Image (cartoon, rainbow, N blue to C red):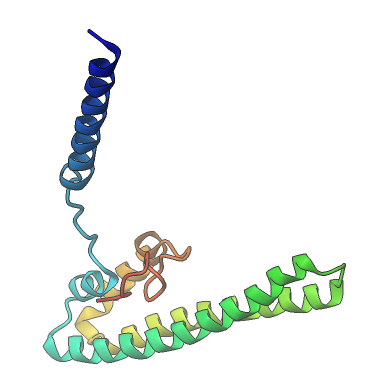
Length: 160
């Protein structure tokens, strides 16, 4: 086998290998099923009727607007905070920005807490027992670490 044929075989092998790899990556990826969203979990766990679902959807819309506003505010402050890395030591500005971040994060948690309280108000007397069981599982269900009910969930719409 001469050197020219050898190079052609290697090039052909590499081309076919790339095609197989590309096909595997494109076609071979198993479809991932979306996890049940918070909306569906809450509706099922609390046994909401159609009227309650409509009211709950209105709560979701308000909650998302409130959270998005706070998250935008948080990102703006964090941007300023991290830009402090480019400055000579300015501890007072650094400290004030850090306190502002803490305050906004506390506001976000209060918004979440109030959202769950508003959900409680939607429950009829016969649903209170379901709500009580649900509350015991809130942190397990929503992980309260950035993947929270109404919070950012890997870029997807939050409760829909």
